[in-house]
Length: 248
Image 1 (cartoon, rainbow, N blue to C red):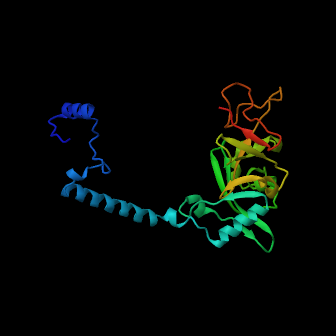
Image 2: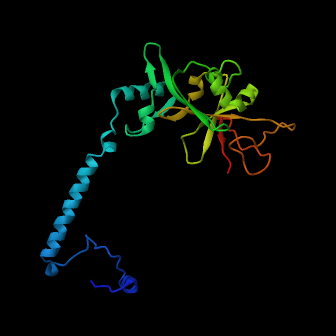
Image 3: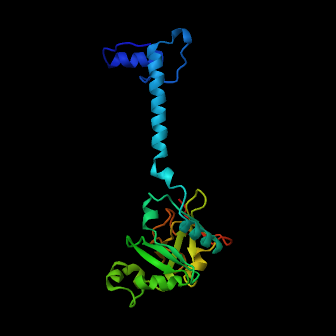
């Protein structure tokens, strides 16, 4: 049914009465007795559009990069042997392009691409090729140690530098499940041990947080994951997985 509208009220009335959305149904059944040259032309154009969309999809870079290079497959295999589930993104993703992680077959170690997040100072740093045998506290020393860290970085991360080391805690987002959860890492363990039995997308992103304790030995609300209820710890640890929840 076609009509020539004269105004907006006419268009609205036509849509409400006929259920017309203004777009022709390209797959609407037409009886053979009513099939004419216009219907034939419409079907021909529909098939052309379908072929064009299929061709564009086949030339899409995301479709072409689903098969990873042998080096990437070897990287994932070695990660699996180290009890790490390593997930690789398509080559068009920024995280895939900037990832410098590689496995040294000669040394039998990973050199990880790391991103360190310091949310309480609004700073983040990228560390390239960190050997997985290094202790986590040694990795952070270059940033938050009172004397060994770089002076410029030390000034930016003053909150962490001035805090006792036992108040500094490191978390890594859990990539498994729907809920937002974080694994708490052990500062006195190597990077390799901390990454075991965890899922990583491209490379680890570590969130460094400084916690202060009041006289009641409860954690205060000066951290970026503070819950709305006063003096309530926003992290609920699980003994089995050493994983924490963010309460909302």
